[in-house]
Length: 333
Image 1 (cartoon, one colour):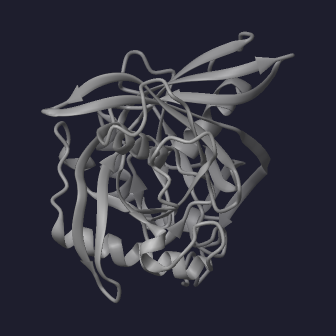
Image 2 (cartoon, rainbow, N blue to C red):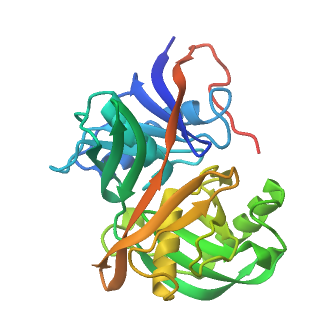
């Protein structure tokens, strides 16, 4: 076997989290963003092996633990998916909160254990519930979240003019009301949701400039989130579906997307500071989200958002690659 990689398998809201625990080649770079570039430039064949068929699938998601370069961080990670590497992932962050404690990276304390996680987007502070020695629900405090466009019109191929908001919650997303396409997040066929979201993503990429005040590596549109239009505060859950990377569908409510939606709702005056909302995914799984502090990101108003959810273990795996294998990875749509 030319490659042998061990992983811990988890899910958050139905969205997979494949955490590499051993066997991945050394990742070079002085900073986490340099490490991200190194994996993209030199180790992408292994990323494809772990994410694509026959060992993964079109909607697989993974985590590469790396050495942190921030003095406060307990651990640092890179995020991988079907297209490449992300800058932030809320559902994986929730899983990593439990995993960091259960593996002894962070010492377990009850009733809450704090974990500080470094990701390409910045530093995240996690609070993990612990009862009877068992880790449970996880909350994390986001990087500064901000809005770059509100009610902007784009021409989505096959759908005409669509009004979108664009926000950053560790990654940039376009947000649009699914009803504009005659769709319902909770009941419409997934393929129709994907097609509409992809058309918006392509339109926004060619229409709206994406910029980040601190790092050019963070300045790209990650995907589109279609919502049920429920941005005004309500005690009832509001649903959304995230289509990101190469048409990948998030089974969870999308932690970085929840962060971006809260920033939009704050920008529009639709939700008060500290008011918690419930966000629901296509699987019916739920995250909570609320703005807990106002801040700035460059010249923009920004917010720190608390996102909460639950993650579960699904197994462990060892992935191998034989030298003679003519199909180390492939991806079908």
